[in-house]
Length: 193
Length: 342
Image (cartoon, rainbow over the protein chains, first blue to last red):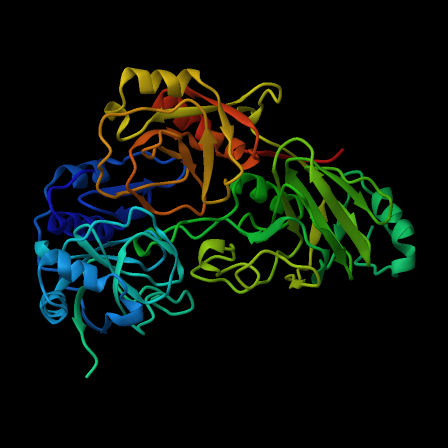
């Protein structure tokens, strides 16, 4: 189902999860929409139909956590930073401060296990995706793609612009909570110091 | 009766023969295999079970066997729960040695196959391998993938609730990777009866192997974005499966499917979704595909035809046909039939 805003998406995702309906196999929040996956052979039950019809008011995310992610900006780990700063008409320090000044919200995860799409990037920092993706982006790369900020949990190909690097382990399938960041969590980027 | 007898390697042939003597619907006790040795790995042998649904919000797809019902049927043929882990074998199979013998079953595409005992390798029925016997699979003959179940299941550690290999992130299954020469894959030990059984796939699977594979689809969430020319191409043209296809997606080559609007915010996607990137060449998302996608989805292959997707190999030709949603639901409920071998 389509939803107007990121807050509405997260509220709907949280509300559907809280229902714990047996016919639901999975719920996938994304960019202004939620996909409800039914178990094989199941149909939409009256309870689910009702839940989908009712507006779930964007409520404060009670369970959401605030993470501080330490980022080394620029240098070899953020090769696209100088061009992005120039494009935004800022010097490097101003650009970095602008990126670190705001609190981000995990809108959803996708692309790779544990890859967060972080909402809250100031509009003057928006960055187009690369016309030709890099063959290998190192794990821990902090990157910008359109209006989102993201962090690559694992090495692999990627088309977002790289501005820095974190040592944080975004995804470890052996952990109790494999993904460091969950939908609705809040994130602040801090510089080492 | 075959009471967990161990035969020496030399007696492969005799033991296999004795196992077959009492094969008319008799019950037997068999302890199962302790492990499987990979004498020669196939092209891509992956430990798989029914997958790990429920983690898509973390960016982890359900994955699992490309035809979960076929693996479940193979499990039932060896007396395992449907959820046990087996091996998904793609395109060119492995040579596997069973040092302590084992009860196994194969479902899915037929592969050229032989046993070191010389006994025949029947598909879709319970097979008993003697101690030291080697089961060798070569090339797929009428599809792309088959599933091997082993009594006791493959005892690799579950990761996020499943023993399925997830290759894109390298976890699950046997050390997060395809089997390699020399691997020893541990199996669970089970006591108790094994029945001689045979399995038949649901009628919805019966396909004409000559001519293009027909995949039945329902409309995708962005179907209305596509113009008449684009939709006409999609439903009348045939598409060839490209070499770059894998468990993440089946890439097709053929008449471009044109549409008017390319910008789409990321949406949740599932296996079977037919995405159309800007070049107009459709991609059918696979079992290990991404959980979100930013390309318009013109159609979705119905669940009853996912087993056909599992059998596609590069060079195969497919075409698409619409089906009503409720008809697709009915087909999705059809199941394998298991019966005692008489």
